[in-house]
Length: 586
Image (cartoon, rainbow, N blue to C red; front, side, top):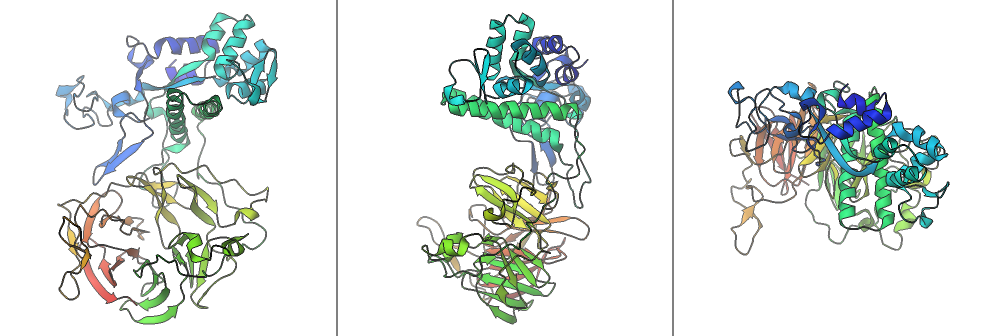
């Protein structure tokens, strides 16, 4: 039996766990019966332009721990070929060997202590308590008060809760020493990558196979193990460390359950359910924020020949030559998707409350959704959310948490039949967000900085994970956007640097430029990154050499409209990029 079989599906529970514990960290144990490194990183994969996905170092797919992805090629490429077989690269630390190593090599995660689910019944029988009480005690949701189990954690004292508390109680009860010795697991084996399946072809447009629920569960366990270690190091109060122990124990139980029986998956998110009553919307803003600028804040293709242009103080429907079809009021929100003659607006241009007088904000907000829907035929924001529009909404529950919800306001969440939203999305750092959304609201680009992915908004399945790092590459084709009058107009002037212009940018332009995303009819992704790079998510196609304040792909993803200063420039986004139109925005 392998480590995976003995630990996750033990036949003789105590003896199998003893066997794993004795070998896992033993450097002299056979290659397939020990750990080859500690998993400490939550990072999964990295991608650079044209490089494909590569496992992150010290993560659950790490080549240093589990073996090389490509046979006889180390991670950095310094060692390549069978002549180097058996040699460990002094640069990346990866063994130059066959990729089949990833079928048998294990890693491990270190925790403060967890209770293996297969021991619950044995512990419960010996202590004379129920299985549920054992699970609650292991998760620090209850403690052992003599022979009783107390759920009031405020009264918990000493080593009476968690796996260590159970071990101490077993020892007092005269339990077999072998059982006592395996109750606390501190090193959890991470099975070989080949035993943790990926899932492909779940939705249209998938570039990468999804890592699957099992690997997602492993990442969560790494996250909580790292946080628990840090809290112990900081000597955090017991109430905090016990809560983290609960999360570690639950994450471990999830990993065990998914390893034993990997679920069949077709979607990550449940089907959304709408409340029985219409969802009321906030309506138009009452004032323009004091610090609002007059730059072009948003553009979106309504159809192949018309664009919706937004500034803080107004909106316009124009044709592809700049001719104004309709002058419309400000909406306060940015149009993020198009549905016939209606524009769904899921993002505010500034903070939501800046568009209202502070003493009346809650009068407008109470019981209403912040999402806006603008009807172009009527020229106004609707008062209720149309039933045929997309229901999903990705938003920040807290600044550091990006979650999946719906357009219903919190006051309408009382329907017990509605599904709970999934936990916070894993992409991004301290301030993750929705970077861009396709004009049909089918896919979204989410995350922050270099930790981003493209998700299918119906199922939650990642189409591309991760998106490549869009660094400015001198070798990539560059599309120049010349000034309309031939003169360079200064954008900013620093004390010790030359003037920069909106028509010239380089690697030092650290501004937050606009992003856009679309899917072609051939299911190929098109992304405009904040660096001006246009890519398919894996490879740089070209770069636009201008400062872009707003951008949008057309319905076919063949053209890209960008706002540069007071102009809108239409770019052919194919293999040979070119400017095919430009006009001054209203």
